[in-house]
Image: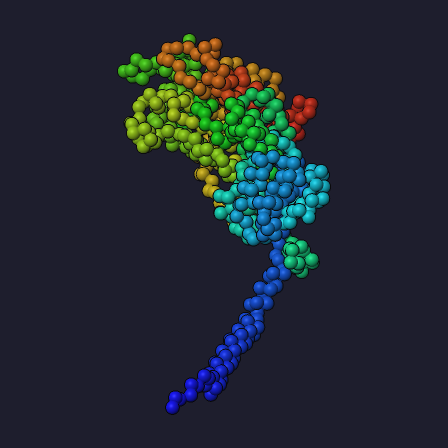
Length: 639
């Protein structure tokens, strides 16, 4: 009999359902336990951490950039100021699709593709998160209105009022005070990101760059509460920024204008120094440029015009121009000869119009081809007699000549705070062996004695060497700074607000009368009957100690005479002149260089005289009261 077929096992199904329910319940309990544990961890254990994160989403710290310190001349005239300006800023985090935002800005303000590329470059610069980046400066009223009307299309874009650097004197102090510009990527990597939060400009050249730490100030902060869209609802905490220090320079606006007027549009440089302090009174490099063009970003066309100009307006001729000093260093060579004992006041040399080394047929020409006959030291300075100084250089030798010229600051940086200064070149045996891999020849010593050959100096170095003669060897590094909020340069260095630079030792002559001998020879240059610059001193109510010089731009052949008609304008000799006055109580030392001016006494000398007059004379052409009492006695003539 067949067995019945069982179609369903109810007991087994019930057991399976029961087991599944138990497993499901355990799984639910496990997940619930994990969720409770996670909530406990987040809400209890990490309560402080997540509270802080939540606050950070609601509260932001905004930097408050400090106002930059102003710069004044010695009489309180503003040279560098700050003026309010409106700029357009973009915050990438708030803008969302910031590329689209830039496209909208270009459309709204009707700008071109060049501005669009510049905006993108500026936005891509690495800045702190949520920090607005200025992309367009000096907004017009129309641009501000267009932006406001289209604000709903420009999330993360704001019009911000800020102080922007302004140079009210324009091009007059472009090479001394310098200018500020936008912080570039290389500078951004070196700067303290906290100290420069919210700051978009930094000193690029001149005093603006050297005194950046003083002028910049300290950043402030605001803690603000924002909504989900980043709009500020209220200020929770405010810390004021510390403005930068105001600094006063030794420069004098009136003297600066007088120096530029004296150059009369010619390419050249004028530097005036106060021998007693080293303060730079005027510093003119012509042609110049308007530094305001660089503050908010100069256009490529404008920059190309300045950069590619044959007259090189961006080139600082006072600090970076390297020129053979020519005869302007003869006073220093004369002092070296006296101090070394190789000549004295009575030493005479016969000048037939040239000089020859023993056993050599080569003739080193005097500028006066007919010669001056028997020449003493005093007459050699007055006449700028090359033959005398050829002979003196050989008597000294290149080693002693290098030693003395270096003591006067030639071939080295001499300033305290003119950071762009070139060192120049005072050649020596070692220098030639290392750089030319050759020995030193006597003929090279000969021409070094009149400031030619390898020798290269800046107008600043010539002014300093002249000031050292005026002060009888007392070293005072040339400086722009007079004080910063009442603190002198020395006090700033003592307070470690400025890098300390040692002052070279004073030049101590074996006999102090040597200084008087050299000074008298320089006075004879301007006031003597046979002086090369006697026309400069005509009618002067004060004594001037001066020295003219010329620097060859291109060499001429042996025995060939310089003919200006055969030389291109820019290949003609440079004209130089150095002077200090009053000669018996020096208050100012001046160095002048006129490119391709040819005649030191005829072209550069009158420029120096105008600068001296502007400093020493009043409106009536008389000596100012502070200088008049010292003019009674002439410089003694010691033999």
